[in-house]
Length: 64
Image (tube, one colour):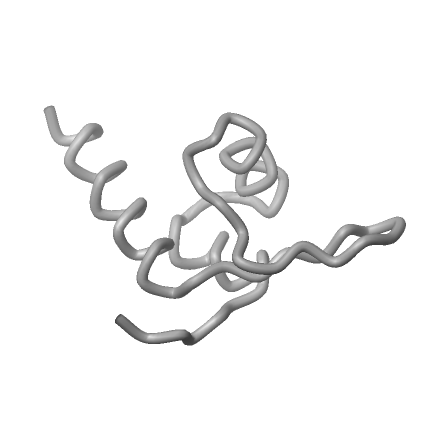
């Protein structure tokens, strides 16, 4: 497993969704940020492997 961390915008591109949807996935417990920075914008960084795994899972669910 790699420790490659990606920002929310890149996670959204991989998942094929908006940044807001990534935030909703985090709130729903489907994706967990490795780092969450305090502040007004609350930047989050995600393990690339976890984002790809979620994308694969969502693609399989959508194909059913």
